Image 1 (cartoon, one colour):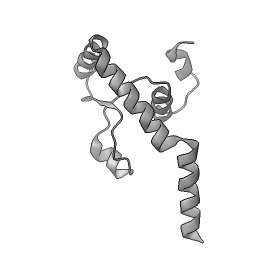
Image 2 (cartoon, one colour):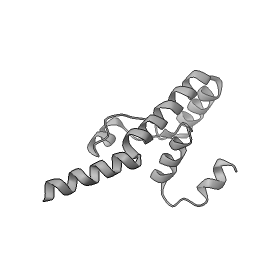
Image 3 (cartoon, helix red, strand yellow):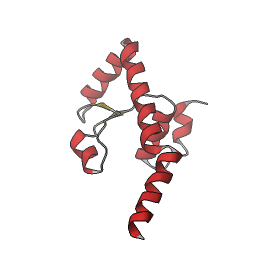
Image 4 (cartoon, helix red, strand yellow):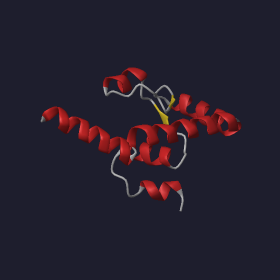
Length: 102
C-alpha cells in the first residue's frame, strides 16, 4: 500500500507526521524548535525547511541523493515516536497527571 493511500484516511497533518515517523519515513516540516519547545518537545525529529517551494525542492533533491541523511532522520523520527508517543509513555504521563490531582 502506498504512503499516499494511507494519507487518504488521515484527518490531521500532525497525525500524518506521527504515522510517517512510526513507519520510519523522514518528515519534512516548517515547524521551528521554538514552536516545539512551546508544547514541551525539546527534540526536533523533523527535517526543517523554510515555507517555500524552492526550499522543499532543494531538500527533496538532497534527501534523494543522501542515504545516510535519510536514514538518520528515519531513526530520529522513530526514536521520537517511541519516546514521546509509545503506549508506556502515554500511560505514565496519564498516571502522573492524575496522581498530582489527587
